[in-house]
Image (cartoon, rainbow, N blue to C red; front, side, top):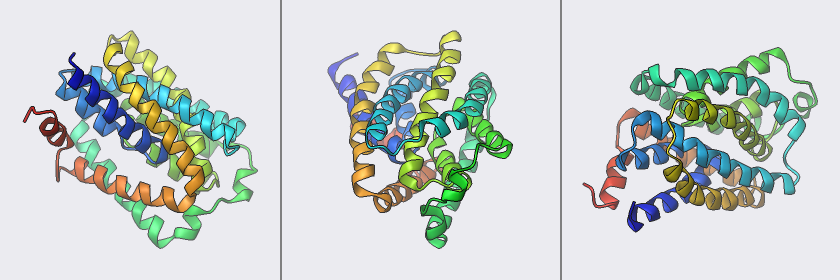
Amino acid sequence: MNWIEITVLIVSGVLVGFINTLAGGGTIISLSVFLIMGLPIDVANGTNRIAVILQNMTSTQAFYQKKVLDLKKGTWLALPAIVGSVLGAWLAVDIDRESFGKAIAVVMLLMIFFMFFKTEKFLKGRPDLMAKKVSWVQAVIFFFIGIYGGMFQVGVGYFLLAALVAGVGFDLVRANALKVWIVLLYTVFALAVFVGNGAVDWKFGLIHAIGNIIGAYIASHMAVQKGIGFVKWVIVVVILLTSAQLIGLYDIGDVISFLMGKS
């Protein structure tokens, strides 16, 4: 590995950590970089989890210090997601990635519709829901989100944000804090599955994680300082870019290859 590849891993990690902390979808960049550098798809998928864990450790600490993280509620919601993530990681090899990716793109675009046309309902928390204990319906929802997160991780933040805001009652800033905590917990178990199947490259993952940590630190502080409006617009931009990639309007891998001089 030369210094150019190391630089690309770190710089792309900063971008991924920033995007994943405020919204989600940054994993597309991670996977593209890993694949261009020669990692098989299953190893790229597993290796990405190293950076996810470290970036979420960073952002979780920052959100906790800002007193916007409900650890107790987040942990209860994470338990079914953990179970689902283990199942999802085991199923990762057999999934039809192209078809599933296009389905995710449609869901992401629908989320923009609800953000603009039902803004008040989506962005504001609901104390009546927040005060309630985790229901079996919420547990089932987070179980299936965990399955998806264990499979690919790409865009799981969108599903978590939707569930935490619309289903659990948190505003976007607090939902972001819970999101990174839940992802941190279930990804530890998903990573163990990939490690057990020899699908992790620790060198690539740890170098990439350096950038992820920096990006996560910046984003977690900006999310609190800039407020809900800032988070909303970051999510909109990332959804549009991610959806265009998943639908096939452009290939971020080609862009990264060009920047790396491999086109």
